[in-house]
Image (cartoon, rainbow, N blue to C red; front, side):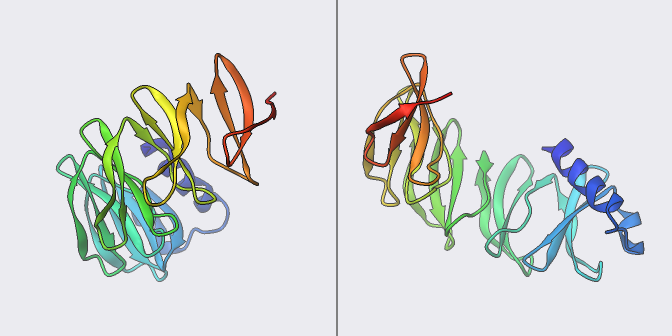
Length: 194
């Protein structure tokens, strides 16, 4: 994660994004929701477009703002901030991903689920792995097998795959019996995958 953020900052610095205020940080991420993730040493914070520090450099890790919220890590746990810097989801999660279509994947211990932009758990934290929703479905892993759920947490495509990717254009790539295939949103095989 650190390397990705560093490289992103380096790319923006080299591509003309190097306003004078950027030089005081080790890296500066792209501006999203009016704020840019910045880092200095081991700490992360956020600045506005003018370079004014809006959210102090007090976080151990942070993700870029998405849909008005940013996941931040402090003292080993992840939570979420709104764009004013106010904590709206306390840091209680082992992992946290960015919001996408009003939902974010979070984990407690070894299990994953989903919260909404009010910080409420909308799909229980019961999965061994989970991906963000795409085209109304999310690939999740339960009891060592992958399947798909809808945004209410209902199983739509059974848990029978070794791996399952996100839907794009109405199809997804999954692995079954050691082979990659393409399925549609009903779980029907469309073709073999290359």
